[in-house]
Length: 348
Image (cartoon, rainbow, N blue to C red):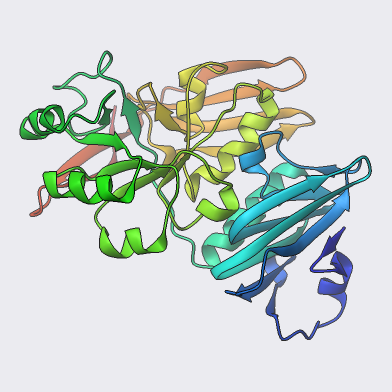
């Protein structure tokens, strides 16, 4: 496997000197962070690996990590990501945004390599955590139940219809086709937008907005937007567990075509057409043994639970654990009208 035309082993063995990037070793994670600055050049090759021995997600938008043997290479902060494959090799071409990172991690298995990669992005590259939301359609939206906890995604962008819901205090999400529509609906009071393309100036100009990209590579969306819509209907059960690790930094919004909404909820995915219930910050994923994953979480009724996923059988097995104490949700309304939720232990 090569990164920036260098064998990955060289990044660990010798301090590479190159005017095009800086390098930082993270001994606690057995990782190296390569930092690149914006370039006026065309997209260039950032990674090349053997197609047979290299693993990545099957969905093209999630091909931001590649693993070979005990090494993972992942990247973030790039645009114009292009993946070229032939019978023998896979090559990734991209162009750095303002700041771009290539993280190289060594470890024992896919789960721990992916965990280390996202932890490095958070702790060393200062990528913020994100909270997944629910996007509901009109036929499933309950104005009383969902007003504060979900966004209503309207089927049309009729301005009068948007205004009618906003006057009721409903949080509306709008699919946009152009820059002009963003300004128009922002002036009306919409603060959640689904976009086909994103420019950094949107965040600067509309700092209080929630942006979800409909088409992009994770490498372009991380740390820039609040969510990414992806198609996971062809995913295996193991892939959906591993893909969920990105949700802390970039919630992936998925439908329930392939997987049960309860499992998607526990794994911290953004809800596209279904309702989130659990708090994803309490979810923990561990590998119990070969091809079996254990996910621990807190249910919507504040009861700790576990699900074992045997990926060889494609079958989740659920367990709930009653205890003398449970987490109780408390809500405080802030001066700006938004709500702050926090949890305390209490007697069940």
